[in-house]
Amino acid sequence: MTTRPTRQARPLATAQDTPASVVTQAATPRAPRPLDLWLLGAALCLLGGGTVIVYSSSAVFATQHNGDDLYFLKRHLMYLCMGGVAMWLGAKVHYQSWKRFAHVGLFASLAALAGVLVLGSRINGATRWFRVGPASFQPAELAKIALVVYLAYSLGKKAEKVKSFTVGFLPHLMIAGIMMGLLLMQPDLGNAVIIGATVMVLLFVAGAKVSYMLLALMAAAPVIYYAIVGTAWRMQRMLAYFDPWQHRRSGAGYQITESLISIGSGGMWGLGLGEGKQKLFFLPEAHNDFIAASLGEELGLVGLIALLVLCIAVVVRGVRAAVGARDAFGMYLAFGFTALFGMQALVNLGVVMGLLPAKGLPLPLVSYGGTSLIFYMFGLGVLLNVGTRTEPAPAALRGLRLWGPSREGMARRRRRAMGPATFSTEG
Image (cartoon, rainbow, N blue to C red; front, top):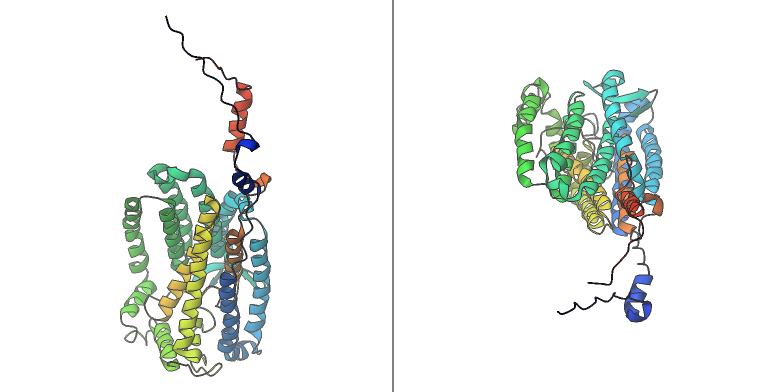
């Protein structure tokens, strides 16, 4: 009868058994990445150029209606200062900290969207703002930021479960659908479309099945059709999109035709800064939604190309920050903020150039300030923070969960309950 050989315990590796290069590499922390000056520079150019065009396009209007040609410039500079604080906060605070506000921010934004329908001020046929004296707040801008933070947290936590329809796809789509429904009741189709597109981008990046996304788009098509055809003024805008000159007198095509006249008048090099004519009560919202048309008239095709290049630079550097993020939450957070900026810039420029039906959306970081400017500058700060982080999150933020213990905490509890591990050296 033969006896089985005894299995010897495997000794633990020591520092002497490990190559010096490996020990040095493990002991030496990675150097932090430098601040993305390309992203910051492109954003500051948009902010600075936007400030100049805001004053140039609003001075006459402000003199006529407010008795002060600096009225809109002063307010814009005030919003810029507030946005600067928000950008500094986003760049300074570790992005993992925003997990704490994932659920709270989502619930608060949904409550604000519902509350504005009851307590909000009605302007130009829409109820989108809370007004307290001269100050105003648009909850749709908070909702976009809060939704991105929540999706980044939820998608990062679910990991491979995102591929599941009932766990990873449907719950996120339902939350976005509730938010979009509240926006459509204001009515605010533009921001609803931006939110829907951003959610689809994040789900695609997270690995959701394309078939699920196509199914969701098919389900949303009747809702979008009814939102357009069922509303007289939206239907007029859609008809004006196909032939704006025919609907110019009715008003539905007036904004688009004036925008095209502004861009066409600028030619290659523009009429010169401050020399635009369309801002003399011809082009509506010359300092806000149609600020790109004012820029095209005064700085020409060259100015519009420079604007487009700067917007593309922000998107490209935002994607770079997302790809280089050290964890899933940072990646989704950067992708979400980049998608928000890119989608809104694309829609705004498409409307100004007559490529899309007219929608009331400002150009991010460029148009006259307000809630949109402040929150987009905050998102820019978060992008900068994600792009520079290489070190692990602080211990207090690792595995952070708002509801219930973390996975790491549950694993530690199981190990304590089992007691110290014992290993047998016999076969």
